[in-house]
Image (tube, rainbow over all chains, first blue to last red; front, side, top):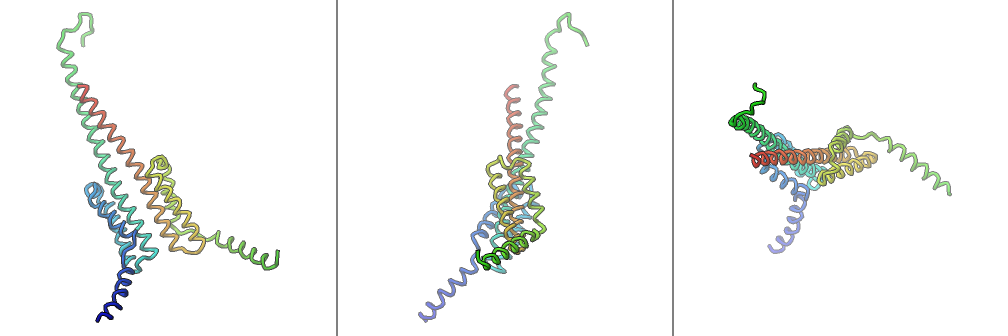
Length: 132
Length: 116
């Protein structure tokens, strides 16, 4: 029995090693998780979907031929697609922030313009000033 | 120079001529276009974007070598890498600009609040 275990252990280890994901695929999975938790999920779900599709391609390449050129490169692309999704999400958040700030600015300005004429209308106009 | 060396030299030159005319994969043009677009928005001036732009250019150079060797599939995949890196360079630059604009707008609002 001991001999059987001793003989099988290296074989099992070899089998596991051959199907272990590449470093690139591990990074791609992690990058997708980051993207899933980022502003992309709310603002740019289409980009997140692209990242998921890219990761799926890499996972399929891993299943077909673990550690292959295709797996490593598709995983690299998947990582970048996830990073892109995060950036698109941030871009959209920035755009909305700017629009909100501009609306607030405009509202404040209008408020100021309403208040200022009322305040200036309070004191009597100089006698020589043109009347409207 | 021996005859053998001359023949070998000629063969090498002929091979170089053959391989240099090997067509690039169809996604060569989109990859180059993506690099051009990233360059045009100033990706070279944004540190993170500049890194991805360089990666994209390096990948195109590698793809050219692979295509010359006849490794079309590998060349195409390497060009896809290049395009993705170039797109990331472009978006990182655009996002950095958008963030600056958003921060400027917020500062303006704050300035207006304080002045009232």
